[in-house]
Amino acid sequence: AIENAARQGDRTAIRDIIEQLDCDDPAVRLLAISTLQRLTGETHGYRHYDDPAQRREAIARWVVALDSGAIQPIQSDPPRTSSENGPS
Image (tube, rainbow, N blue to C red; front, side, top):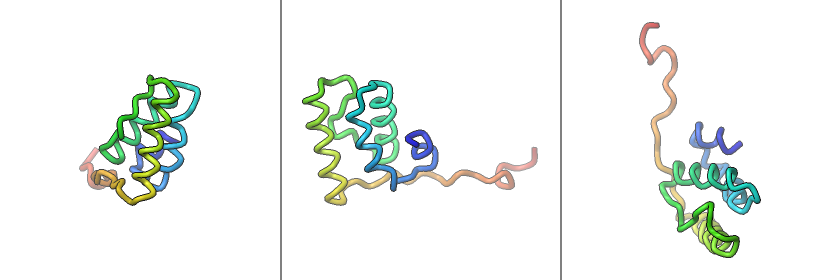
C-alpha cells in the first residue's frame, strides 16, 4: 500500500502511512518516511532509526501537521500514457 501511494502520489494514504512510522520493522518505517517525504517534501524530524520515544515525538508532529492542514503534497507530473510516449 505504501509503495502504491508513492507511485501514484496518493495523498489520501498519508494518515495510514504516518501510522506505519511506528511499525516494529525498521524497513517498513524507512519506506513510510521515504514515501511521506516524496509526497510532502517533509520529514518533521522523523528518522526511522531513532529510539521509540524520539520516533513518537516526530510522529506526533506529523499528526499535528496533517490535522491542521499544513501538509501539502508536492505536485508531480501525472503518469504519461503510451500515446504520449511516442512511437514504440
